[in-house]
Image (cartoon, rainbow, N blue to C red):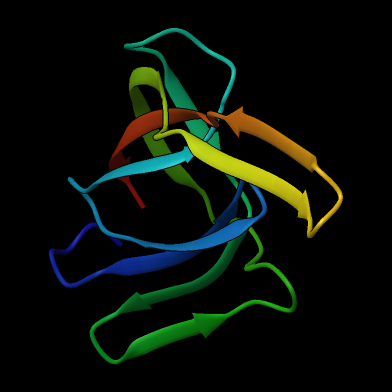
Amino acid sequence: MSTQTAYAIIAAGGKQHRVKVGQRCKFEKITGEPGESVELDKVLLLASGDNIQVGAPFVSNAKVTAKIVSHGRGDKVTIIKMRRRKGYRRKQGHRQDFTEVEITKI
């Protein structure tokens, strides 16, 4: 299933992603060093031309192989709590860790 029109929908990091071979994606943090290869086995759908396989919930014996490109941190998200007229204000920030991967094989 390595033709150019092939794609897969996978579950990674609590989200679903549509991926193709050669595509770079940012997932929630995956353990591993840059340059290592990881296998993502939670494949929800495989499609190649007119051939479509839908899993229940996952497609059996299907894997997506990806190479870890880098680790990083996302943009800062600011959370503000406030109660009107009470002088109560709280400000908090958060940056989510992510892993950038390149899809090598479906």
